[in-house]
Image 1 (cartoon, one colour):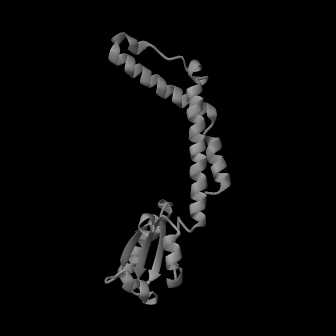
Image 2 (image 1 turned 90 degrees about the horizontal axis):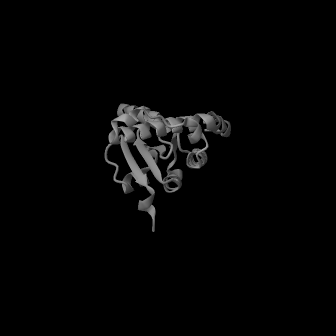
Length: 168
């Protein structure tokens, strides 16, 4: 997500619309509570103007905007690290790629195997949907060391790596 898209998304979250939605939700909540306690309270309505100036709602709005900004920054950092795309790496790049991210899915494949091509298609579709995970593929013929060390016996082979297993 580029910075302009983030700004556009944040600007679409206009303060008035968020406050009005929060006020409507609050109104529904209050009506539901009152209905449970008193049958006549169902006809009461919460004054929306009072809720528009509510400091708690303004605080919630500011916290949500800050959380969206933080999430957008995290997505940009992950994209720079190669997340969100499915790409081929060499045997020499393997350790750097796997240890450089918290979650990595590595597909060991052979370029002539039909089932490997099917797996490629599915992983390529999944990569943009899971930005927090790096998707890579490694030609098993060109990486005999890692094929032996990871005991890859059948292709296609998909191995998942998590950061906590690499800590010393």
